[in-house]
Structures are given as C-alpha cells and as structure tokens.
Figure 1 (cartoon, rainbow, N blue to C red):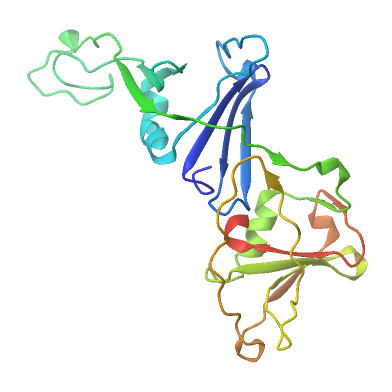
Figure 2 (cartoon, rainbow, N blue to C red):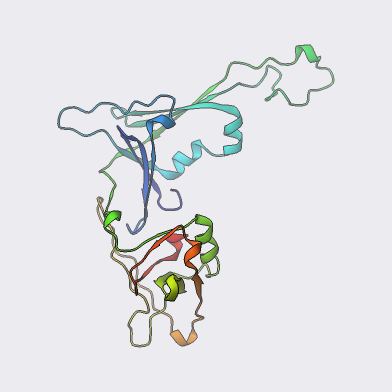
Length: 260
C-alpha cells in the first residue's frame, strides 16, 4: 500500500479490518481486508442508530515505522494490539514482546556469553516488554472505488510473476503502456506513443470514480516524437493466463508506474 499512497485508510467493519490507499491523482486504488478469523480477537466497535462505524486515515510513514525490521519483529513480538480511540484522536498500536533482555543485557537465549558467566546463572529473561505507539489520525470519508467488476466486458487473470516478467522489458522512465488483444487469443503489451497527427496509439480507459474529493490533474508533458522513440512490444500466449475473457479488438492504455 505504501507504493500507492502516502496515507493509510483504516476502516473497521463487521466483515473485518479494511486497509486502503489511493494515489495523489486518484487513478490507482488498493484495498486489503483482514477477516475477523485473521485475528485472535476482533471487536469492530459499535455504531449508534443511523450512524456508521468510525474510520480514519494516518500517515503511511508513521504506520510503517511501527513495523520496520520485520524479521526482528517475527522473532521478538508475540502479538500486536490495535486500538482506535476516536475521542483522543489516537490510533494505538501495542507490540507485546515475547521476552526482554536478561539482567546482563543479552537478548535471545542463544547469544554468546562472556567466559565469566556460569551456564546455570545464565540470564533468565525479564518479563516481555510492551511497546506502545500513539499515532495521530484524521477522520475521513469512506474510500471506495465505485465500479462493478462483474459488469466488465474483458477480464484477465494471471499470476503476478507473469506480469512482473512482462513489464520488466520496459524502461523505468516509460510513462504508459498499452495492453491489447491479438490473433489466437494472444495479449500484447507495447509502449504508448502518440502519432504525428496527435492521435493516440492506444485508448485510455475511464478512471473509476473514488468516493473522495478529486485532486487537480497532473501536469501535462510533451509527447515524444514517434520517429525518435524506440518501440517495445511483447506478446503473451493465452495459456500463460489463468483465465482470459477479452472482447476482440480491445485495448487500453494505463500508467506503467502504478501497474508496477
């Protein structure tokens, strides 16, 4: 989510805890839903009659700072408690460590001891410490992309590795790519370039409407000249996808950075 937006939207619902993010131009949106069974204990809170459950947003960097160094957290933290306190305008995250340092300053039991330490006196660990982080948040509207995937005329489903290997052939500075269909059910990917007449070589699909205030459009850039641009195109066979349902002649142009 941190690759998409600078703010993290949290929404506790009856169906689970929703974590969402949207980019600054409101053209990319991602959402993760953690079902109640994911947690040892899940209490979404209660809403009054005619009111909705509380939702908020926090700075992404502040939230990520709590969970930095994941390999270390997996070894030392037993559980994480997340509390949302609307009256205090604080999102509280508590990391309950499995054990603390011993009285001689050593961490895990497997640490090498100095020669003067007897094995039997080896440092019984102190009770596990609790690290508490208080993050300020802002109340926000519901963040939801308004579109129905069941009504889409075209649908592609493929392992992430297939798509990663496909876009790796395009330079990092490329702004947009066009995905289209070809003979035999093949799917093509090519860099997007405007022709000399000013018409597009690809068609941009309509952006989904997000339930948040829109941001100003990005600054336009001068299109490259086709004669001076290296064209890159690759084809993916139908059997590389898990499922392919594409209308003949379909093609769409989108931002490569967001797709990556």
